[in-house]
Image (cartoon, rainbow, N blue to C red; front, side, top):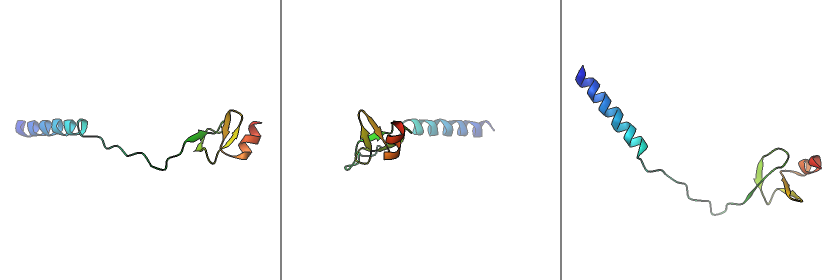
Length: 69
């Protein structure tokens, strides 16, 4: 019984160390990434090319730009 518990404890320690020290996989940045703007009304993020810009604020749609006034 002690042998089984010892084997389980060693296996658990090995699994914990493997999980903690495995190399992290990082995704390479997208080549065609675009800057994002946060809508001042609802907070959703949209690409700057699709966002509506009024003064110093950005909006996700014309409706939100008109709603915010």
